[in-house]
Image (cartoon, helix red, strand yellow):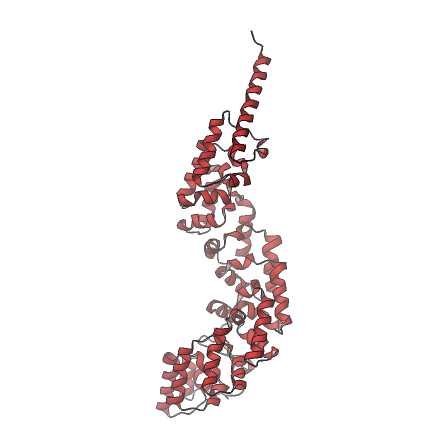
Length: 442
Protein backbone atom coordinates (compact mmCIF):
# COMPACT_ATOMS: atom_id res chain seq x y z
CA UNK A 1 0.00 0.00 0.00
CA UNK A 2 1.34 3.50 -0.77
CA UNK A 3 2.32 5.58 2.23
CA UNK A 4 0.85 9.00 3.18
CA UNK A 5 4.19 10.59 2.25
CA UNK A 6 3.94 9.17 -1.22
CA UNK A 7 0.53 10.86 -1.69
CA UNK A 8 1.85 14.25 -0.60
CA UNK A 9 4.80 13.96 -2.95
CA UNK A 10 2.52 13.02 -5.83
CA UNK A 11 0.19 16.00 -5.01
CA UNK A 12 3.11 18.39 -5.09
CA UNK A 13 4.31 16.98 -8.37
CA UNK A 14 0.87 17.39 -9.92
CA UNK A 15 0.72 21.04 -8.75
CA UNK A 16 4.17 21.75 -10.15
CA UNK A 17 3.23 20.17 -13.47
CA UNK A 18 -0.03 22.16 -13.53
CA UNK A 19 1.83 25.40 -12.75
CA UNK A 20 4.30 24.77 -15.57
CA UNK A 21 1.44 24.11 -18.03
CA UNK A 22 -0.37 27.30 -16.91
CA UNK A 23 2.80 29.40 -17.17
CA UNK A 24 3.47 28.06 -20.66
CA UNK A 25 -0.10 28.93 -21.63
CA UNK A 26 0.29 32.50 -20.33
CA UNK A 27 3.63 32.91 -22.11
CA UNK A 28 1.99 31.82 -25.36
CA UNK A 29 -0.38 34.79 -24.95
CA UNK A 30 2.43 37.23 -24.25
CA UNK A 31 1.69 37.38 -20.52
CA UNK A 32 4.74 37.32 -18.26
CA UNK A 33 4.04 35.00 -15.30
CA UNK A 34 7.05 36.01 -13.16
CA UNK A 35 4.97 37.97 -10.62
CA UNK A 36 2.72 34.95 -10.10
CA UNK A 37 5.42 32.95 -8.30
CA UNK A 38 3.92 33.57 -4.86
CA UNK A 39 0.34 33.38 -6.08
CA UNK A 40 -1.75 30.24 -5.77
CA UNK A 41 -2.80 29.39 -9.30
CA UNK A 42 -5.87 27.35 -10.28
CA UNK A 43 -5.56 23.58 -10.42
CA UNK A 44 -6.06 23.33 -14.18
CA UNK A 45 -5.19 25.40 -17.21
CA UNK A 46 -8.88 25.46 -18.16
CA UNK A 47 -9.69 27.62 -15.13
CA UNK A 48 -6.90 30.05 -16.02
CA UNK A 49 -8.10 30.13 -19.61
CA UNK A 50 -11.57 31.08 -18.37
CA UNK A 51 -10.10 34.00 -16.38
CA UNK A 52 -8.01 35.27 -19.27
CA UNK A 53 -10.89 35.05 -21.75
CA UNK A 54 -13.21 36.83 -19.32
CA UNK A 55 -10.75 39.71 -18.99
CA UNK A 56 -10.26 39.81 -22.75
CA UNK A 57 -14.02 40.11 -23.26
CA UNK A 58 -13.90 43.14 -20.96
CA UNK A 59 -11.43 44.70 -23.37
CA UNK A 60 -8.13 44.01 -21.61
CA UNK A 61 -5.15 43.07 -23.70
CA UNK A 62 -2.10 41.00 -22.72
CA UNK A 63 -0.23 44.26 -22.10
CA UNK A 64 -2.99 45.41 -19.75
CA UNK A 65 -2.76 42.14 -17.81
CA UNK A 66 1.04 42.46 -17.66
CA UNK A 67 0.57 45.83 -15.93
CA UNK A 68 -1.09 44.01 -13.05
CA UNK A 69 -0.81 40.21 -13.51
CA UNK A 70 -2.11 39.59 -9.98
CA UNK A 71 -5.64 40.03 -11.38
CA UNK A 72 -5.23 36.47 -12.72
CA UNK A 73 -5.49 35.27 -9.13
CA UNK A 74 -9.12 36.41 -8.99
CA UNK A 75 -11.88 33.87 -9.48
CA UNK A 76 -14.37 34.72 -12.22
CA UNK A 77 -17.39 33.67 -10.16
CA UNK A 78 -16.25 34.66 -6.67
CA UNK A 79 -14.45 37.92 -7.47
CA UNK A 80 -14.85 39.34 -10.97
CA UNK A 81 -18.56 38.90 -11.62
CA UNK A 82 -19.79 40.17 -8.19
CA UNK A 83 -17.49 43.23 -8.29
CA UNK A 84 -18.34 44.18 -11.88
CA UNK A 85 -22.06 43.67 -11.28
CA UNK A 86 -21.91 46.04 -8.30
CA UNK A 87 -19.94 48.67 -10.25
CA UNK A 88 -22.57 48.55 -13.00
CA UNK A 89 -25.31 48.84 -10.39
CA UNK A 90 -23.87 52.08 -8.94
CA UNK A 91 -23.73 53.77 -12.32
CA UNK A 92 -20.64 52.71 -14.26
CA UNK A 93 -21.79 51.77 -17.78
CA UNK A 94 -21.06 48.21 -18.85
CA UNK A 95 -19.13 49.56 -21.84
CA UNK A 96 -16.78 51.37 -19.41
CA UNK A 97 -16.10 48.46 -17.05
CA UNK A 98 -13.06 47.28 -18.98
CA UNK A 99 -11.50 50.76 -18.87
CA UNK A 100 -12.31 50.95 -15.16
CA UNK A 101 -10.48 47.66 -14.50
CA UNK A 102 -7.50 48.84 -16.58
CA UNK A 103 -7.26 51.99 -14.46
CA UNK A 104 -7.77 50.25 -11.14
CA UNK A 105 -7.36 46.45 -11.47
CA UNK A 106 -7.05 46.09 -7.69
CA UNK A 107 -10.82 46.47 -7.49
CA UNK A 108 -11.18 42.83 -8.59
CA UNK A 109 -9.73 41.71 -5.24
CA UNK A 110 -12.22 43.79 -3.24
CA UNK A 111 -15.09 42.48 -1.20
CA UNK A 112 -18.32 44.11 -2.32
CA UNK A 113 -19.88 44.11 1.15
CA UNK A 114 -16.81 44.85 3.25
CA UNK A 115 -14.95 47.35 1.03
CA UNK A 116 -17.00 48.75 -1.85
CA UNK A 117 -20.40 49.35 -0.28
CA UNK A 118 -19.00 51.38 2.69
CA UNK A 119 -17.13 53.74 0.31
CA UNK A 120 -20.25 54.36 -1.76
CA UNK A 121 -22.27 55.00 1.41
CA UNK A 122 -19.56 57.43 2.55
CA UNK A 123 -19.80 59.37 -0.73
CA UNK A 124 -23.59 59.50 -0.48
CA UNK A 125 -23.18 60.79 3.07
CA UNK A 126 -21.14 63.69 1.67
CA UNK A 127 -24.12 64.63 -0.52
CA UNK A 128 -22.69 63.24 -3.73
CA UNK A 129 -25.77 62.67 -5.88
CA UNK A 130 -26.65 59.05 -6.51
CA UNK A 131 -26.45 59.53 -10.29
CA UNK A 132 -22.95 61.03 -9.90
CA UNK A 133 -21.38 58.13 -7.97
CA UNK A 134 -20.34 56.25 -11.11
CA UNK A 135 -18.92 59.44 -12.65
CA UNK A 136 -16.88 60.20 -9.51
CA UNK A 137 -15.45 56.68 -9.32
CA UNK A 138 -14.56 56.67 -13.01
CA UNK A 139 -12.59 59.87 -12.48
CA UNK A 140 -10.85 58.58 -9.36
CA UNK A 141 -11.32 54.79 -8.96
CA UNK A 142 -8.62 54.66 -6.26
CA UNK A 143 -11.23 56.01 -3.84
CA UNK A 144 -12.47 52.44 -3.53
CA UNK A 145 -9.19 51.50 -1.88
CA UNK A 146 -9.11 54.20 0.83
CA UNK A 147 -10.03 53.59 4.45
CA UNK A 148 -13.00 55.67 5.50
CA UNK A 149 -11.52 56.63 8.85
CA UNK A 150 -8.24 57.75 7.25
CA UNK A 151 -7.40 60.29 4.57
CA UNK A 152 -10.93 60.87 3.26
CA UNK A 153 -12.54 61.70 6.59
CA UNK A 154 -9.58 63.87 7.62
CA UNK A 155 -9.64 65.99 4.47
CA UNK A 156 -13.39 66.54 4.71
CA UNK A 157 -13.11 67.56 8.37
CA UNK A 158 -10.36 70.04 7.56
CA UNK A 159 -12.34 71.74 4.81
CA UNK A 160 -15.32 72.13 7.11
CA UNK A 161 -13.01 73.60 9.77
CA UNK A 162 -11.85 76.41 7.44
CA UNK A 163 -15.40 77.36 6.53
CA UNK A 164 -16.44 75.15 3.62
CA UNK A 165 -20.19 74.53 3.82
CA UNK A 166 -20.75 70.80 4.55
CA UNK A 167 -23.52 70.81 1.93
CA UNK A 168 -20.95 71.86 -0.69
CA UNK A 169 -18.57 68.96 -0.05
CA UNK A 170 -20.60 66.71 -2.35
CA UNK A 171 -20.42 69.05 -5.36
CA UNK A 172 -16.70 69.52 -4.64
CA UNK A 173 -16.18 65.75 -4.74
CA UNK A 174 -18.13 65.49 -7.99
CA UNK A 175 -16.02 68.21 -9.56
CA UNK A 176 -12.62 67.13 -8.20
CA UNK A 177 -12.69 63.88 -6.18
CA UNK A 178 -8.89 63.71 -5.96
CA UNK A 179 -8.79 65.93 -2.86
CA UNK A 180 -10.26 63.06 -0.85
CA UNK A 181 -6.97 61.24 -1.34
CA UNK A 182 -4.77 64.22 -0.40
CA UNK A 183 -3.07 64.35 2.98
CA UNK A 184 -4.04 67.38 5.02
CA UNK A 185 -0.67 67.95 6.65
CA UNK A 186 1.53 67.68 3.58
CA UNK A 187 -0.71 68.87 0.73
CA UNK A 188 -3.93 70.68 1.66
CA UNK A 189 -2.93 72.74 4.71
CA UNK A 190 0.31 74.13 3.15
CA UNK A 191 -1.74 75.28 0.14
CA UNK A 192 -4.31 76.97 2.38
CA UNK A 193 -1.62 78.53 4.58
CA UNK A 194 0.11 80.10 1.57
CA UNK A 195 -3.06 81.75 0.30
CA UNK A 196 -3.97 82.97 3.77
CA UNK A 197 -0.47 84.46 4.09
CA UNK A 198 -1.19 86.52 0.94
CA UNK A 199 -4.08 88.14 2.78
CA UNK A 200 -6.91 85.97 1.49
CA UNK A 201 -9.47 85.46 4.31
CA UNK A 202 -10.34 81.83 5.02
CA UNK A 203 -13.98 82.63 4.42
CA UNK A 204 -13.22 83.73 0.87
CA UNK A 205 -10.80 80.84 0.33
CA UNK A 206 -13.54 78.44 1.41
CA UNK A 207 -15.92 79.95 -1.18
CA UNK A 208 -13.23 79.65 -3.85
CA UNK A 209 -12.66 75.96 -3.08
CA UNK A 210 -16.40 75.27 -3.08
CA UNK A 211 -16.60 76.58 -6.65
CA UNK A 212 -13.16 75.47 -7.89
CA UNK A 213 -11.94 72.45 -5.95
CA UNK A 214 -9.50 71.71 -8.78
CA UNK A 215 -7.26 74.49 -7.42
CA UNK A 216 -6.04 71.91 -4.91
CA UNK A 217 -4.46 70.02 -7.78
CA UNK A 218 -1.95 72.80 -8.48
CA UNK A 219 1.52 71.78 -7.29
CA UNK A 220 2.48 74.07 -4.43
CA UNK A 221 6.24 74.14 -4.91
CA UNK A 222 6.40 73.68 -8.68
CA UNK A 223 3.61 76.03 -9.71
CA UNK A 224 1.80 78.04 -7.02
CA UNK A 225 4.75 79.60 -5.18
CA UNK A 226 6.64 80.40 -8.41
CA UNK A 227 3.50 82.06 -9.81
CA UNK A 228 3.10 84.23 -6.72
CA UNK A 229 6.75 85.27 -7.03
CA UNK A 230 6.19 85.90 -10.74
CA UNK A 231 3.33 88.30 -10.06
CA UNK A 232 5.49 90.27 -7.65
CA UNK A 233 8.40 90.35 -10.11
CA UNK A 234 6.12 91.91 -12.75
CA UNK A 235 5.16 94.74 -10.41
CA UNK A 236 1.98 93.43 -8.80
CA UNK A 237 1.84 94.95 -5.32
CA UNK A 238 1.83 92.52 -2.40
CA UNK A 239 -1.18 94.18 -0.81
CA UNK A 240 -3.38 93.38 -3.83
CA UNK A 241 -2.23 89.78 -4.38
CA UNK A 242 -5.24 88.47 -2.47
CA UNK A 243 -7.58 90.46 -4.72
CA UNK A 244 -5.82 89.17 -7.85
CA UNK A 245 -6.15 85.54 -6.71
CA UNK A 246 -9.78 86.04 -5.65
CA UNK A 247 -10.70 87.49 -9.04
CA UNK A 248 -8.86 84.85 -11.07
CA UNK A 249 -7.87 81.80 -8.97
CA UNK A 250 -6.72 79.91 -12.08
CA UNK A 251 -3.76 82.28 -12.28
CA UNK A 252 -2.09 80.09 -9.64
CA UNK A 253 -1.85 77.16 -12.06
CA UNK A 254 -0.94 78.85 -15.34
CA UNK A 255 2.47 78.85 -17.06
CA UNK A 256 2.46 82.40 -15.78
CA UNK A 257 5.93 83.71 -16.54
CA UNK A 258 5.57 82.99 -20.25
CA UNK A 259 2.06 84.47 -20.41
CA UNK A 260 3.00 87.61 -18.45
CA UNK A 261 6.10 88.18 -20.58
CA UNK A 262 4.14 87.83 -23.80
CA UNK A 263 1.31 90.13 -22.69
CA UNK A 264 3.63 92.75 -21.23
CA UNK A 265 5.54 92.94 -24.52
CA UNK A 266 2.26 93.14 -26.45
CA UNK A 267 0.92 95.92 -24.24
CA UNK A 268 4.13 97.89 -24.66
CA UNK A 269 4.40 97.41 -28.42
CA UNK A 270 0.77 97.67 -29.54
CA UNK A 271 -1.01 99.61 -26.79
CA UNK A 272 1.85 101.87 -25.66
CA UNK A 273 1.33 100.85 -22.03
CA UNK A 274 4.54 100.67 -19.99
CA UNK A 275 5.34 97.84 -17.49
CA UNK A 276 3.99 99.83 -14.54
CA UNK A 277 0.72 100.46 -16.35
CA UNK A 278 0.58 96.78 -17.31
CA UNK A 279 0.94 95.81 -13.64
CA UNK A 280 -1.99 98.09 -12.71
CA UNK A 281 -4.06 96.50 -15.47
CA UNK A 282 -3.36 92.99 -14.15
CA UNK A 283 -4.19 94.08 -10.61
CA UNK A 284 -7.63 95.23 -11.73
CA UNK A 285 -8.34 92.42 -14.19
CA UNK A 286 -5.92 89.47 -13.94
CA UNK A 287 -7.87 87.46 -16.52
CA UNK A 288 -6.08 89.54 -19.15
CA UNK A 289 -3.02 87.27 -18.86
CA UNK A 290 -5.08 84.59 -20.66
CA UNK A 291 -6.87 86.85 -23.13
CA UNK A 292 -5.96 86.35 -26.80
CA UNK A 293 -4.26 89.35 -28.31
CA UNK A 294 -6.59 89.54 -31.32
CA UNK A 295 -9.52 89.78 -28.86
CA UNK A 296 -7.79 92.64 -27.06
CA UNK A 297 -7.23 94.55 -30.29
CA UNK A 298 -10.90 94.60 -31.37
CA UNK A 299 -12.15 97.13 -28.77
CA UNK A 300 -8.84 99.02 -29.03
CA UNK A 301 -9.26 99.42 -32.78
CA UNK A 302 -12.86 100.49 -32.22
CA UNK A 303 -11.79 103.29 -29.86
CA UNK A 304 -9.01 104.41 -32.18
CA UNK A 305 -11.48 104.43 -35.05
CA UNK A 306 -13.71 106.84 -33.13
CA UNK A 307 -10.95 109.44 -33.17
CA UNK A 308 -9.57 108.85 -29.67
CA UNK A 309 -5.75 109.30 -29.68
CA UNK A 310 -3.67 106.19 -28.90
CA UNK A 311 -2.20 107.73 -25.73
CA UNK A 312 -5.74 108.39 -24.44
CA UNK A 313 -6.80 104.84 -25.30
CA UNK A 314 -3.84 103.60 -23.25
CA UNK A 315 -4.97 105.74 -20.30
CA UNK A 316 -8.51 104.40 -20.63
CA UNK A 317 -7.29 100.80 -20.55
CA UNK A 318 -5.10 101.33 -17.49
CA UNK A 319 -8.01 102.99 -15.71
CA UNK A 320 -10.61 100.43 -16.83
CA UNK A 321 -9.06 97.19 -18.18
CA UNK A 322 -12.53 95.69 -18.64
CA UNK A 323 -12.72 97.69 -21.86
CA UNK A 324 -10.57 95.19 -23.72
CA UNK A 325 -12.89 92.31 -22.82
CA UNK A 326 -16.08 94.00 -24.04
CA UNK A 327 -18.02 93.08 -27.17
CA UNK A 328 -17.54 95.68 -29.86
CA UNK A 329 -21.24 95.49 -30.83
CA UNK A 330 -22.26 96.69 -27.37
CA UNK A 331 -19.59 99.39 -27.39
CA UNK A 332 -20.92 100.66 -30.73
CA UNK A 333 -24.45 101.02 -29.36
CA UNK A 334 -23.25 102.83 -26.25
CA UNK A 335 -20.98 105.11 -28.25
CA UNK A 336 -23.75 105.96 -30.72
CA UNK A 337 -26.06 106.94 -27.85
CA UNK A 338 -23.25 108.96 -26.25
CA UNK A 339 -22.66 111.00 -29.42
CA UNK A 340 -26.14 111.28 -30.95
CA UNK A 341 -28.36 111.54 -27.86
CA UNK A 342 -26.09 112.86 -25.14
CA UNK A 343 -23.94 114.99 -27.43
CA UNK A 344 -20.94 114.97 -25.14
CA UNK A 345 -17.26 115.49 -25.99
CA UNK A 346 -14.89 112.52 -26.34
CA UNK A 347 -12.77 113.72 -23.43
CA UNK A 348 -15.55 112.62 -21.07
CA UNK A 349 -15.12 109.04 -22.26
CA UNK A 350 -11.37 109.33 -21.73
CA UNK A 351 -12.01 110.58 -18.19
CA UNK A 352 -14.66 107.93 -17.49
CA UNK A 353 -14.06 104.86 -19.70
CA UNK A 354 -16.22 102.81 -17.32
CA UNK A 355 -19.16 104.23 -19.27
CA UNK A 356 -18.85 101.34 -21.72
CA UNK A 357 -19.20 98.73 -18.98
CA UNK A 358 -22.71 99.83 -17.99
CA UNK A 359 -25.84 98.45 -19.66
CA UNK A 360 -27.22 100.88 -22.19
CA UNK A 361 -30.83 99.79 -21.76
CA UNK A 362 -31.01 99.23 -18.00
CA UNK A 363 -28.76 102.01 -16.70
CA UNK A 364 -27.45 104.59 -19.19
CA UNK A 365 -30.70 105.41 -21.03
CA UNK A 366 -33.04 105.46 -17.99
CA UNK A 367 -30.70 107.67 -15.98
CA UNK A 368 -30.03 110.04 -18.85
CA UNK A 369 -33.77 110.43 -19.38
CA UNK A 370 -34.24 111.20 -15.68
CA UNK A 371 -31.51 113.85 -15.90
CA UNK A 372 -33.14 115.37 -18.98
CA UNK A 373 -36.51 115.57 -17.26
CA UNK A 374 -34.89 117.38 -14.34
CA UNK A 375 -32.74 119.52 -16.66
CA UNK A 376 -29.63 118.46 -14.77
CA UNK A 377 -26.20 118.58 -16.40
CA UNK A 378 -23.60 116.38 -14.73
CA UNK A 379 -20.55 114.23 -15.45
CA UNK A 380 -20.84 110.63 -16.58
CA UNK A 381 -19.46 109.24 -13.33
CA UNK A 382 -21.86 111.33 -11.21
CA UNK A 383 -24.72 109.88 -13.22
CA UNK A 384 -23.67 106.24 -13.53
CA UNK A 385 -21.26 105.33 -10.77
CA UNK A 386 -23.72 104.77 -7.92
CA UNK A 387 -26.62 102.59 -6.86
CA UNK A 388 -30.19 103.33 -7.94
CA UNK A 389 -31.04 104.54 -4.46
CA UNK A 390 -28.06 106.89 -4.34
CA UNK A 391 -28.91 108.21 -7.81
CA UNK A 392 -32.42 109.09 -6.66
CA UNK A 393 -30.98 110.82 -3.59
CA UNK A 394 -28.71 112.85 -5.84
CA UNK A 395 -31.60 113.90 -8.04
CA UNK A 396 -33.58 115.00 -5.00
CA UNK A 397 -30.62 116.89 -3.64
CA UNK A 398 -30.57 114.65 -0.55
CA UNK A 399 -27.00 113.49 -1.12
CA UNK A 400 -24.23 115.92 -2.00
CA UNK A 401 -20.63 114.94 -2.70
CA UNK A 402 -17.74 116.33 -4.65
CA UNK A 403 -16.78 114.65 -7.90
CA UNK A 404 -13.01 114.65 -7.42
CA UNK A 405 -11.07 112.60 -6.80
CA UNK A 406 -13.13 110.06 -8.70
CA UNK A 407 -14.04 106.55 -7.67
CA UNK A 408 -11.91 103.50 -8.36
CA UNK A 409 -13.74 101.10 -10.63
CA UNK A 410 -13.53 97.38 -9.89
CA UNK A 411 -15.57 95.01 -12.03
CA UNK A 412 -17.77 92.81 -9.90
CA UNK A 413 -16.84 94.62 -6.71
CA UNK A 414 -17.62 97.90 -5.06
CA UNK A 415 -16.64 101.41 -5.97
CA UNK A 416 -14.08 102.70 -3.54
CA UNK A 417 -14.32 106.39 -2.82
CA UNK A 418 -11.82 108.61 -0.99
CA UNK A 419 -12.02 108.21 2.76
CA UNK A 420 -12.88 104.52 2.37
CA UNK A 421 -16.50 105.38 1.65
CA UNK A 422 -18.24 102.59 -0.23
CA UNK A 423 -20.90 103.01 -2.89
CA UNK A 424 -22.99 100.00 -3.88
CA UNK A 425 -26.46 98.55 -3.71
CA UNK A 426 -25.57 96.98 -0.38
CA UNK A 427 -23.52 99.52 1.50
CA UNK A 428 -22.88 97.63 4.72
CA UNK A 429 -20.81 94.74 3.37
CA UNK A 430 -17.51 93.82 4.97
CA UNK A 431 -14.25 93.68 3.04
CA UNK A 432 -14.50 89.88 3.02
CA UNK A 433 -17.94 90.05 1.44
CA UNK A 434 -16.66 92.45 -1.21
CA UNK A 435 -13.92 89.97 -2.09
CA UNK A 436 -16.46 87.14 -2.11
CA UNK A 437 -18.76 89.00 -4.51
CA UNK A 438 -15.84 89.70 -6.79
CA UNK A 439 -14.82 86.01 -6.69
CA UNK A 440 -18.30 84.68 -7.50
CA UNK A 441 -19.07 87.25 -10.19
CA UNK A 442 -15.89 86.43 -12.08
